[in-house]
Length: 226
Image 1 (cartoon, rainbow, N blue to C red):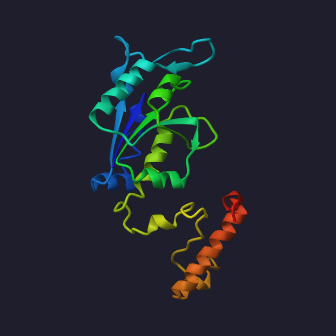
Image 2: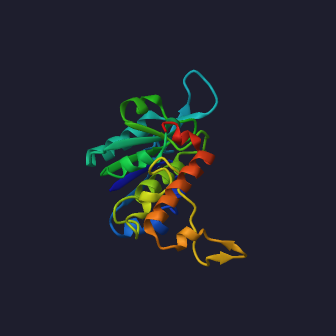
Image 3: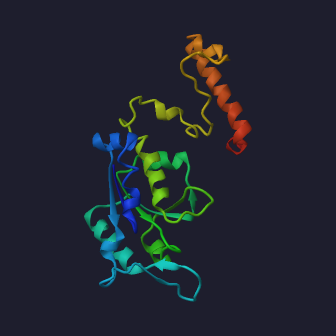
C-alpha cells in the first residue's frame, strides 16, 4: 500500500512513521508513506498558500490553486482509491473504516490547516472526509498520523502475530477484555484462575463475556443493536 500525505508543515509527520510498527511495515515493504510539502506548489515568490475569506470572518483559508496543482500532479502519476480530507466535520473514524481502507492500494490524505480549505477542493477532488473525534486540532497532521497508524498495523504481515489485530477493541463492536502477564501474583493481586487453566474454550468464553461486560459498562452505545 502507498499513502501520500499533503501537508503545510510536513516536519510534524517525521517521527510517527519512523518507529515501532509503522517502521516495521515500511521496512518490510508492506507500506509506503510519503509526506509532501504543499509549499512546493505555493503561489509567487513567497509560496503563498492561504488568503482571507470571501465575505469576511476570522481565520485564513487554504487557497484553491496550490492544492489543485498539487493534487493534479499526484493524480497524473497514479490512480487513488480515496482522496481523504482530515476535517472536524468529516465522518467519524472507526475501526471498520480502517479495515476497509487497509484493503486499498493508493490513498492520498490532505491535512487541513488555518481555517480549512477552499470548499471547491472538497467538492471537486475529495472523495472521503474523516474526523477522528469531536474536537479541533491545529492542523490535520496528527489526525492523519492516527489514520495511517490504524491502517498500517492491520495490513497482513505487519504484526508478528497475524491474529493479534483481530482481537483489538472495536473489531467486533466490542471493547477488548482485560489482559494479564507474569507474575501471576503481584502484591497479592491475582490473575483470574481461568487464564491459568489451559482450557482454551473456557478462556475464549471468559474473554468474550468480559468484553461484553466491559462494553456495557464503558461503551453501551456499541451494543445498541443487541
